[in-house]
Image 1 (cartoon, rainbow, N blue to C red):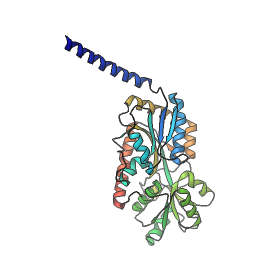
Image 2: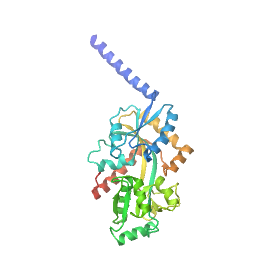
Image 3: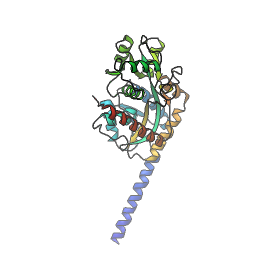
Image 4: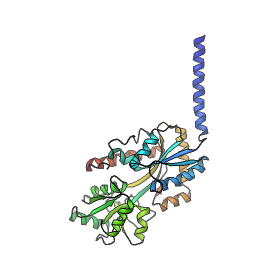
Length: 324
């Protein structure tokens, strides 16, 4: 009798626990949500993430508080989220850097981009622009490639830091085109752009928001954008793929949760973000940042990350790049 009573009590506890867990998921959220951004305030990731956080708070009817945790090219923020409780109250707005590049640039980034996170939704895709000093002799991408092939190592390209997205895109371009251009690392996009405009370095891959105004002011010349399709922010600029078929190197932003976050919560956030991405004012805001909205299922984001990991791991292995 005692044994039967104990078994019944255990079963009842299990049922209550499961019921309580299900109710907690159904009622989520009931308190503010932290949106971790792994870079300092004011940068591209922060600005892009805050467009989403403001709308997400409205959709979920709960506060979404941005928490900037910068350092180690995004690794600090990624580690923080990977170690957070999988309850839906800590989300991660991040880039292809933490989930496609850093795992190979760093000997131990402190997290696994697949095992430690639940993909929620791919938010935006953002190509870079290949820009040159206005006095540079090449007027087209084909002419630049021809110049570089004729004089290997003669020309140099600026990038905001070793392993940065523009650096990786530049290396990918060089490997694809079969050319030798020197990499010159800078501490940030601003100093690099200043030297390209000043003629100290002739070439640079850079984000659309910072470079496009300089192109339109005549301070830089744009040769190509790195996405497969022309950018809606600058449809007059051809793609690299129009000269090198199949070339695709776009930055991207996505939303994640810690591994183990219940699927009903993941789905609820996914559906909310997909609604947000269809709002005209959101599309316009992202267009002004040189980004295209993407959206879709968690599985779509998971597939994207696997493709990015394969692409960048191969490039990093071939070039021997390491984080500084």
